[in-house]
Length: 313
Image (cartoon, one colour):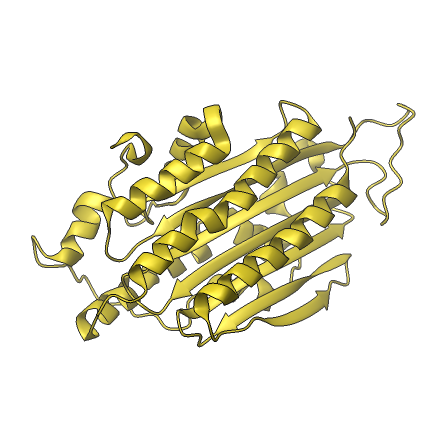
């Protein structure tokens, strides 16, 4: 079955709608501002950002569908056979930065990539005669959680929802997530993980598309109960200062290591949309370490260590 980019695009647009609606319900007062944009090289998207809400200090949910005649270096470094090929890349990506330090930051992304002959037009005119090589395509995505103060109940719920969405793939996708969202220059994980996958096409288009949809549809059921449990917890300057400090790690990962950020910038994507994942406020402290045994130290000592959260009762 050839890839159906129209079906993927339709799903991703509806996913952005449903996630934004759910987040507005949770926040109560905040509303998303939409910014539609086009890209000279091909494609465009719609970026939606909620700022200064009652629950979410900043939430960005972006849809993009970009295309071009040649791929950027970040995409061809491991796939040199795709150099010089026209491509389409579609996805929904979000990052949520809550106000309350007891509510974790969260990230989700689902995406589809396709490169090959006939991909330099939209709508696509793929050659199905077999005269031209079949396009190369794959799905990717996942979601991960970055708490500032950990709660075992939340970690278990998060990972069990991820396991329910991905089934037998969960152990591999969990490890992939742990390995990917790791700050090598700090030698520490970004958060408590979740699931992550890329280059996924082995079962064929229909089954691969089903998996991507399962991941996208699972995000709100995974995140919303955690937000609703923690958004009313009392906090003060100490917790806020630690939240801003840990947000620095988030910025470092996104700018230094994240392949999606690199691809977007190198492919001439819209900078405002690519960097809307960054938090509105952040702080760095030189060589700061939490007091041993403190709630802040517990984040690193307990929650940032990879564990089989889904298997614990």
